[in-house]
Length: 494
Image 1 (tube, one colour):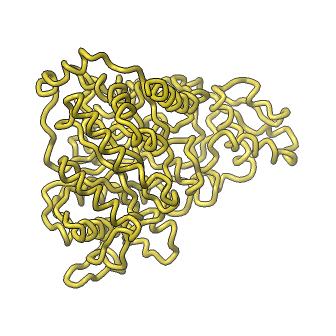
Image 2 (cartoon, rainbow, N blue to C red; image 1 turned 180 degrees about the horizontal axis):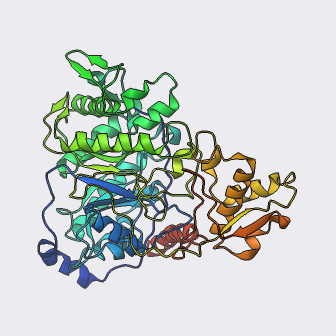
Image 3 (cartoon, one colour; image 1 turned 90 degrees about the vertical axis):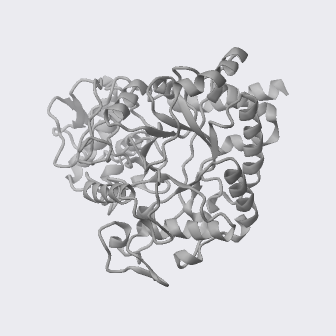
């Protein structure tokens, strides 16, 4: 059944427009450059970039290729990522943030510009294989109070016209990732979209159906467990439960199937019970709170993958031939908002530096995950609390460090929660020190910090060393200004 609300605010990246020649060439090159869409179940990943320590996009693409991951979902149209994905053979879903929906819904000139900048210029021979455009990200969340709701369908219609003008409408599909709170029910078979969404969902699924697009939904059993103390923990996994949900002749032993079939029932009520469904986000965090740990994440993700690839389907769709899922997420994102919870920065199956957190068989040929190659780290040194100093007046320093750097592992249930007071101080100091690219002054803290060459990591509590190929100070500004530049260009062409 539907999970708790989840906000993912992403900012789009745009770039300069393509030439008219490139657009014309696309029509003849697509069939030569790319294979037809795959019909078997596929395991993809979400590649988020809200990180304090960003790997080079080329390193991330190599990581995807080494792990034989053939589908990736972006939350914007970041040009660096799309350039890196060229010639990779990886199918791409690019995103449009909710903040741009009003502009794109108001004029085909705006949608034409966006398509030229972010799709046409990459869909050339040897380019990036863009298959989907995600129009908004969970725009119907109840917490948004309807602020994006009226823009979704007009934006879809304008973007579809723009794709048609670029001769891409038959290849690139428009989708709208929805949170599971868009529908509701006490039992899966009684699933229905929220009453205030009935009209717009009818319009949306009609549009998706007429254009051969799937319905994209984000399902998070972890959030159901996190947000409800009465939620049976074993029901969140795939290993059987002592609290099954009986719905007429159907018995549900896991939350994923129950949630999925609630959506199936909701679509059936609108007359689209056979519409293809893609899972846009699903996963389990590894840190930051109780139940967010390596063991639980591995158990959930491996169970999910095995379940999906078995093609057994769900009670309302038994023996379903295919179900694409995009794991959330590829990498940890240490600069995400922790408003939903401290776990928000720890969804990755890989840590921020591309190192596998736990053994996971994606069913793609490798029995375990392969680590990122050629990662360029800062020198092996750490900032820790100076044992010769009186640390009684350190609170403000910790507050400053953790207001900028990521200290979420120190919270209750986190992997570093039990390392003691001095350990907590050292972790906060080091997080700030690495974020500042090991600048000598950033380990001062009025003489309370000192640099060490001995790794202070304890058990599962890892004291990270930053990577050199990062843009920790400028990436958020870059993304924000990309959106502003798009809006300015659109304003002046009107």
